Amino acid sequence: MGADVGPALAIRDGDLTLDRRARTLHRGGLALNLTTREFDLAAFLMSHPGVVVGRDELMERVWGWDFGDDSTVTVHVRRLRNKIEVDPASPRRLVTVWSKGYRWGQAA
Image (cartoon, rainbow, N blue to C red; front, side, top):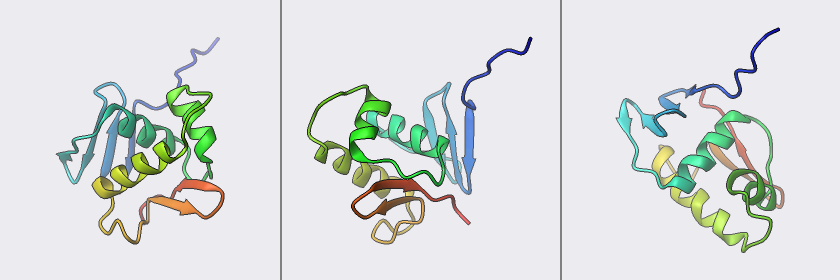
């Protein structure tokens, strides 16, 4: 009987490396200064590349909230985007899918 290993402890995407055990995200070898919520958001989205996830679902699945102001998600997405994107105004990784939510688009 095989063991359930759960999600990958390390996720790589281009110059980004997320380490779940150390709770760190590195870009080009340099550690990014993330809040707990930013790290949790990055870990969730990087674990589900290409999947569109709405704000309500992110609040519930990432932070365990069953109610709240969904603009909180927007703020955390913007802050995370500013830290991980080469050009935050034209994101390639943390992509907005208008009227639907957000999607992790892996680096080329």
